[in-house]
Amino acid sequence: MTASATLQLESVNRQLDGKSAEHAIQWASETFGSGLAMTSSFGAQSAVMLHLVTRIVPEVPVILIDTGYLFPETYHFVKELTDRLSLNLKVFSPRVTPARYEPLHGKTWEYPEGMEHYHQTFKVEPLQRALDQLNVTAWLAGLRSNQTDHRATLRTVEKQNGIYKVHPILNWSRKDVGDYMTTHNLPYHPLVEKGYASIGDTHSSRPVTEGEDERAGRFGGFAQECGIHLPQSEAENESLGSSGL
Figure: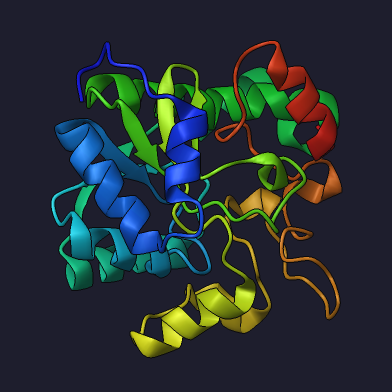
């Protein structure tokens, strides 16, 4: 598919409705070719998407945004999965280091008004830079509709900020994810054993208690999304409102 080509999203989503995750990934590979990439947070169950995608598209670029605030366990997990799955890993970092950011701006993630600035600086900007430098026209993401209010509104294929996004496991349940992990003997993030269900930065992740939603342990209860998966447009206001930002 050329960069100038335009998909008819309604038709594409009807075509992919009810199809397997593998089918959606194969469709994306055939449609976008070398313009296809995927993102991974190397979080609790990230091995599922990494395994699914690289079985079909082994050389797909895997983009990791290293904020500098990741858990030590995450860095070890990245190495484990990179070695095991032979990932074509592409690491991008913010233009400012944590050591410089905090004296200039403070710990902005500690209050709702500052969280957007932190997310824009440490996550959204480096991701956009990655997409630009890698000439990405389509982005595979492991979002699931039962995770946040915003994600419940998504379809298998969407367009965000000029980039097509493909969500192969959008309709998977937690059981589906667990079954896939078991079938393929895939490892969970090490912090899962300590009660973490959703894992990002050290300051925005905590263990969840019994009965809590898996995203309840993120962003101090201020938000469900970090901004990476939200459109940077007028529609963003609606998305931010629904996610609690």
